[in-house]
Amino acid sequence: MNQPTAEEALKRLEVLVGEWILEAKPPDGPPWPGQARSMIEWHDSGAHLVVRSTVEMPEAPDSISIIGCDGAKRTYFQLYSDERGVCRVYEMSIGDWEWKLWREGEPFSQRFSATISNDGNTIVGRWEKAPDGSTWKTDFDLTYRKVG
Image (cartoon, rainbow, N blue to C red):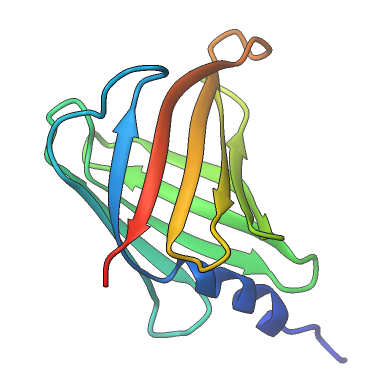
């Protein structure tokens, strides 16, 4: 049986690979204090991205995520976990210089929408949440700047 491969879908993830400095801030507020970084690299298998993020702010947890795809459906998923013991699964899309993550359910629905710069060195996005499942509010703005 001929199985579709994930080669094309995985190529779209390449723009995320690298070391990033993160800047987060509340809506219309100053950036959060402390440094935040994210390292995004290919897993040895070449079939997944590993995302490791560290934040020098007690209220924001360090985290690790695995990004992968369903090659046949050309869909993406992110498995997220952090040092608080929180684990979540996000659906994801990437393409046409846009990156999106979303999930529905308890304790609240979340979504992230970002624009990737044409040179791939900056990603500007926003996390939103809907505690009641339908009314979206900005949680924080998040900018990724590629190092080097």
